[in-house]
Image 1 (cartoon, rainbow, N blue to C red):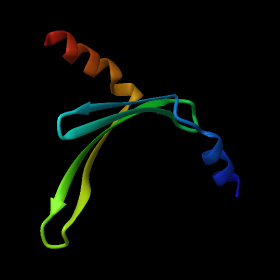
Image 2: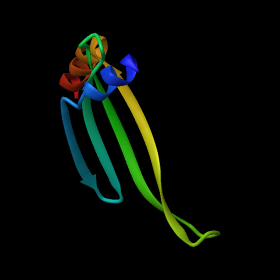
Image 3: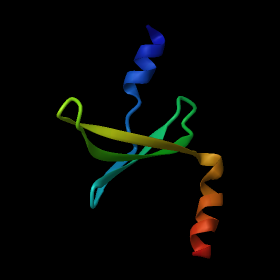
Length: 79
């Protein structure tokens, strides 16, 4: 039960969604139990299944951990 209590009290530090054409990107900064930050980037794309005749969402997720933030910052400066 203690693990559930710790999990429930943790909240997103920051969340933002960005629509880009047929895709939506979700940026979520979260904290671990040890108060270290990480970023999840989720790409969501709406697709149609012709067999079932229904829409569904295809999702891809990337986790970026605090120890790697600086590496990505350096990469963005190169562009």
